[in-house]
Length: 179
Image (tube, rainbow, N blue to C red; front, side, top):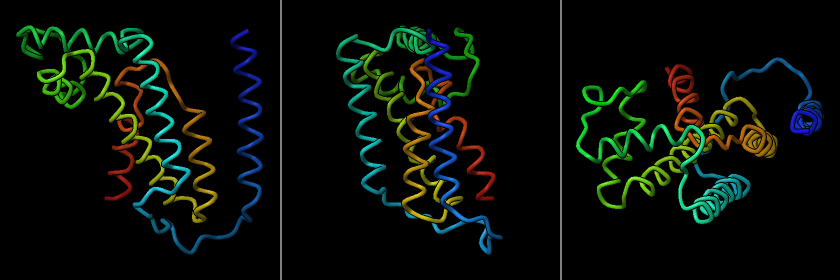
């Protein structure tokens, strides 16, 4: 049933994307990268605020993000909070930026809430970077907003692990493009 639902929604998302791309005539671009606005549009604010509300409700109902891939990162944070040293006492397979900011925050608010805040902040930062990248590729503001909404909903991942935040995957590509 889940696969059939996925396939049906995939077809709908594909049709929406085809309709969006069909509206723009294909022409040789004079500019490779379009001008990028830093101030989010109302559509972007709506998506970001919607994500905050969704994650907040999930956290308040569940009391934590202790399921899926997030459990691994919270386990590492709990070990660090109890005195273990990352990479010496704890085998951690990722870079320090994926855990140290949450660890420093955990000294003030506890491991569970620190992980939730850091995860949501990285998720939102990744969504914002996604919007900036879309603007650079899509010239029209309205088209960029529509594509952003479509991708932010279509790529939503509830595994809640730092592996799955947009920032982790988009930041290297954006840095390469800027260079």
